[in-house]
Length: 109
Image (cartoon, rainbow, N blue to C red; front, side, top):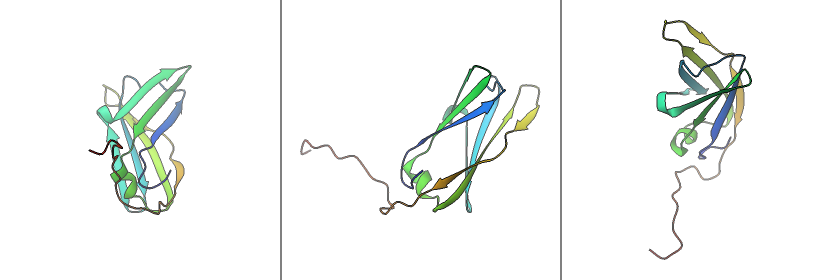
């Protein structure tokens, strides 16, 4: 993943149905940490596995330094039983231009 991009991170949780759980996805990169939950997390279930998707903003990825980042999912059911996945790791790559960019229409307006 590159700083300043808007990636969709897709995580597979094998052997678990998370569709009826409250799901929290936490990313830690150096001293920066962010957690997505609720409407920021899409969960689907098929073939015995849950797919969890979150989208990051430019602002969020610009706060991550070039290094290894960790991601983990925690979830809780209606009875209060909480669990967590193993941590997964991914690399954050540096972008040469480290500011939020905006689309500019080519129609002269």
